[in-house]
Structure formats: C-alpha cells, structure tokens
Length: 553
Image 1 (cartoon, rainbow, N blue to C red):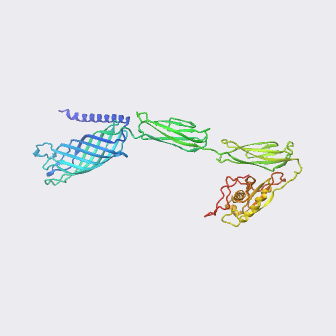
Image 2 (cartoon, rainbow, N blue to C red):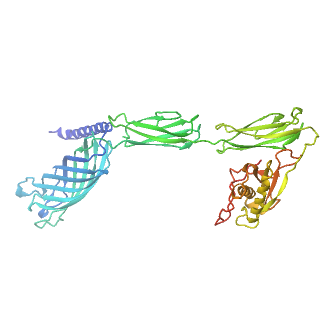
Image 3 (cartoon, helix red, strand yellow):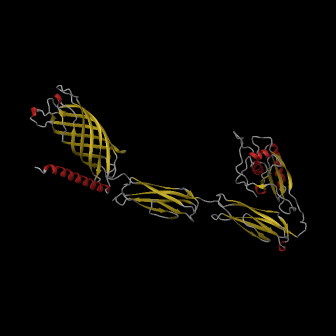
C-alpha cells in the first residue's frame, strides 16, 4: 500500500503521454487523408460528463455525474455546407447529492436527460474542424432527493473540435456545452431553482453523404491581355478547394509562343514571331495525393495585336536645281504605334547624302536635263517598310529654265465673324471656295496649298487653330461643296500669326518653279487633325480644341 501514492502520479503521467502521442499520430494521419469537407450529415456518439450546478429539494446539491452518453445528428444545408440543423440527446445517470439522501441508503439515484435542437456552424478542414452551436429544448431532471422527476425548458450553446481520421470518420476531441434549465422545488430549499449545467463530451463522428470533396477548380490570368509580337506574356493560375497541406503540381500549355517554364504556378510566354490573333495558355493543377477527381484546368486568353505600318510623305526643296546645287529632301513619317523609325534613301541620279528623316541631293553633269527620283523608306522593324518618292529636275549652271513659273496667290477667306466657331467655313468663305474649286478644275497640273493662319491671341490659346482652319477648307472643297475637288491635289498647311484670322490659297505648279520659290507654312498631319463639316453644331460649352499639333516638315 505504501507504493500506491507514488504509482498514481506515474500512471497519470504515462496516460497523458500516451494520449498526447496518440493525438499526434492521429493528426499526422489525418493531414495525409482526403477528409470530407462537405458532408450532408454527421452522427456523433460518445461519452458525456455533467456538472449540473443546481439544487434539488430541501437544499440537496446535485453533484457531478460521471456516467453518461451524448448523441447528436447534424444535417448540413446543401447550399452552405458549414451550416446545419442539429438534434442532440444526452443522458447522465447514477449521480449523488450532497448531503446523501438517507432514504436511498447512499444509492446514487440522480439522473438528468436533455433533448435539444438548434443550429450548428462547423468550419470543415482536412484535419481539425472546430464548431459552435446554439440550441433549445427540454430537460428531464431527477435529483436524488425528495421531489419527483420533472420536465422543464432548456437552452444554451457550446462548441468543440473534431479531428479528421478518414473521409467517413472523425474523432470529437472535445465538446463543451452550457445548458440552462430549472428544477421547480416541491419542498422549500432556500436555493435557486436554476440549473446552470456544464456538459463535456467526446467520441466519434460518422460523416454521411460525402462521396467526394467540393469540386476542384482553378482560375488563370495574364498580366497583359493584349501585346505586340515580341513582348512577353506572364500567365498565373490559382486553385480552389485544394488541400493546403498537399503539394500540388502545375502544368502549362499554350497554342502559340514559347513557354519559359511549364511546371510552375506562373509562366512567361515568348511571343516573338507570333502572328496577330487570339491565343490562350491553359493550366492544369493536380493533387497527386488524391486518388480521383484530383485535377482542375483553366485557361487565360491573350491577344497579339495587329500593328499598322508607318505613314510617310516625301518632299523636295527646291524641285529644280543646277549642277552642283543641292536640294533638301525630307521624309515626313510617323508610326501609329509610336515605335521608333529607321530611315534609308535611294536616288536615280545625283549625289545623295544624309541620315535620318532628311537627305541632300546634289546634281552632277550626268544629270543635266534629267528628272531625279529620290525615294525615302521608313521602317519600324515590325511591319513592312513604307516608301515615298519625290522628284528633282536638273538644269545647266546659270541657264534659265524655260517657262519658269511661280507660286500663285489665289486669295483668302477670313474667320472673324463667328467667335464661337472660329474655324468654321462661313457663308462668305463658302462663296469664295465654290469659285476656287472651279478655278482648280481649270488647272489640271499642280496642287493647291491651303495655309491656315491665326492672330497672336488665338495662337497663345489654340496653337493648332490655323491647322484646323486649313483642313476644314479642304473638307469643304472635297466633301461639303457642290464641286468636289480631288483631295490629292489639296494640301493643308499651318502658317504663323502674320496674316491674322484667315486661310490663304496658293496654287503650286507641278514643275518648273522659279528659283527661290518656297511653299508657305508646314504640312498638317491629317491623321492627327481631321477636317470638320461647316454644318457641325456649335459646342455647348467652351471652344472645341484641335486634336494635336501638326508634324513639322
């Protein structure tokens, strides 16, 4: 007997160590399983310990009851598998009172039963799944003294945690419930009739209706949905409902381009050389530890944009030179995508020098009397190069060119009468342009320069107003007016502030311009500043602004 006190602590420690080891093993086993995270129904059954925390008749306190059971059934809602309706029943038997009822000769005669129902929320995982719940119901209370068995209303709540073992089986490690009820005393006791009971339970849980886990899915995305060929595309995928404790694998495939890495969560696609169009990259995520339905596939679309080639226009100044004289050749070019351009030049005669968007042509003796064609080519390195040609005529040094002609001033239109629309072709200007279009038809060779001017105040506020006036005049001559002129023979140009609020018209003969003749202003890029009809409504607020400054020639 003397060794019993020393054995009790040793046995307790041994039991606790064994229990802790078992829990660790179960936890490790559970983490490797594909547990049920969306059951339709769960049935729990196990041991129950009850602290009634109440009094019977005549002040008899009901002691803890160590013999008992607890069973419950929880049905989970299909649309929200963490929420469910729960029904719980428990019984506790052979409890004592203090003092012991002498009429029972010390026999443990206290019993307590509960029938409860309510709502339960359980966070289902592949290992530990905690839950909370609330319930109401009825209590059957039978203290071991004096009064009879009585029924009363009960209510409360609690929670606990389950450890997943397999898809169909879990262990309820702990369940703690608070239950409020009353025992109406038959005989006076001087104590409260309320019972604030604490019930502890543990046992096993059967998961029903869990034939499979929630469907695995994934979503794929790109950092940029539209790119030019040669620009990289980064694709990424993320899985849903995969076990976070499992190592999942990734596999990428694309219907165009070259993948940098096909077995990572993110991959980069090299789009060099890809034709414009729509493409996609698909990702397959796999959980190797799952035996079936262990993959999810998703795709990320992307587009290779269709680039537009550059726009180029060649001009020479002057267009007639003598031997040894230079002519400045300019290629006005722009790229719709804003890509940098490279330039190259060729000529059918003379000496050509220069780089970039301008070159210089010098006539030689072999070029006397000939027309030299100079061709400039602009390339952005991605679309087909674009070329434009202009011509230069040569003459003997000091010789006069036969039938030398000059640029002709064909008058002007003013834009002073409508301050709300200072670029509009008004009725006075309309009459002038109708006559101008007939005159242009009578001159089949040559072009018409329309030079738009502004005054200094307008230029400070609207630097492109002169260019807008020029393109609006061209729009009337080619579209609005009764005599449709050839758009290729009309060139809008932007002048300065020396002529005020006006547009001047200069007829430029096709060849044989006299020496020293120069065209007024700079060429307007009509892709950036577009013509407007004279019938365009007046803006409600403020003044419309020209779109962008014209390119310099």
